[in-house]
Structures are given as C-alpha cells and as structure tokens.
Image (cartoon, rainbow, N blue to C red):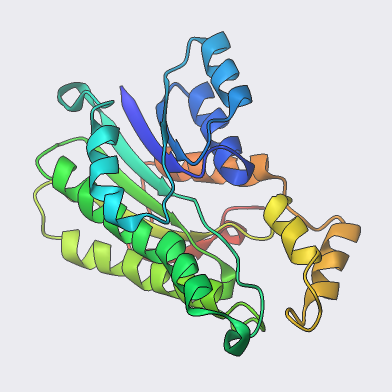
Length: 252
C-alpha cells in the first residue's frame, strides 16, 4: 500500500489532489478542519482507502499528537511509500504589515510555516527507519519569491517554506533511508482563495484589479490540472529533491 498524507484536503487544490490520489489507488489520509462529504462518498463508492483526521493546524502545539494519530492509520511494515503534501494555507491578513495585528501575523505564520515544519519533523521521526519511498511536497507560492503589496505574512511564510524544503534535502542526504522534499508553487488556481483575493480592498491589496483580470480572461488554472502535476511528482521515478519549483515547469 502507498500512503499520502495531505493537509487542507477538504476543498480546492487539496480536494482535487485527494480525489486523483484515490483514483490512483493510494490510501489518502486527509487532515483538515472539516470532512468533505463529497470526497468521503467518492472513496466509499470506489472502495478506495480514505482516512480523515479533523484538526486545526493553527494549534501547532498539538501537531505531534496529530502525527501520532496519522501514523495509526499506516501499516508501516507493509508500506511501499509514505508521502506528505503540506497543502493547507491561509492568505490573511491581506493588508500592509503596519495595519496587521500580532494575532493575525501569528496565525498566518503558524498555519503556513510552523505547522508544516512540525509535521515534517514528526513525519521524519515516525518514518526514519522505514525503507519505503518518502516524499514531501510543500505547497509554496510565487508570492514567496516576489514581493507582493499587502501579502507580508503570506509571502514571508512561503519564502520560509521554500528554504525549509531545501534544508530538508541537505539534512536528509546522507541518511540511510532519506526523506526527499520539494517546494512547489501551484500557480494561480481557480479556488476560493482567488475569490478572497478579488474581494480585497485596493488600499489593502494594490494588485486586486490584476487578479480580477486573471478571472475575466480565464487565466486561472483548474485545481484538477495542478493536482495532476502533484500526483506526477509523487509517482515519477526522478524526484526534484531539494528544488524550489513551480507548476509552469511541468505544463506544456
């Protein structure tokens, strides 16, 4: 059996990826604040393996316990592959940093950066002695590579995730059974996050009109298209370990 742990699988890119992984025969372990009934119904209909663990990733102190629960769903002695997709993330606060409260900044960094870091740490502890293939895909953003007005928290957290993904590779390189990692920017996807961006006030987000144009000009990627690339990265023989990459490198 091959396992994929995916955060934020209840909607958007996470849901599309979970659905495709089920189609490919993976045991999907969904970590999200709420269960997606449509996803659960699809798994039941197909006889596919889906486990759901309800968890709010803003509670970073409890992530170690969360990962204990995750690995209770994994038969490690039979696992051919165990993979982690850190997909969950939030955009707020969308506004210049001087108008952002400490609470808002902390929530953003907790969910976008600290939770994935702790999940990776715990993943490594549980899987250190396993010979199974182990791949981590951290969902990053172009905003972590180029400054965007009003996205101080989001961009900074994603920049941190890019570097963290590279550090994983450096630290794991000499391990007997290494964990491989990549930081992956999924592009501009037609999800609820894009709706949130388009509804932002121009005083808070200077590029709001440009994002409205993306929608009007049909430049947004379908979540299902990006999900195909993520599953490809899980399955391809050659994995871009330690790289900071984007969906554009895999779309023709």
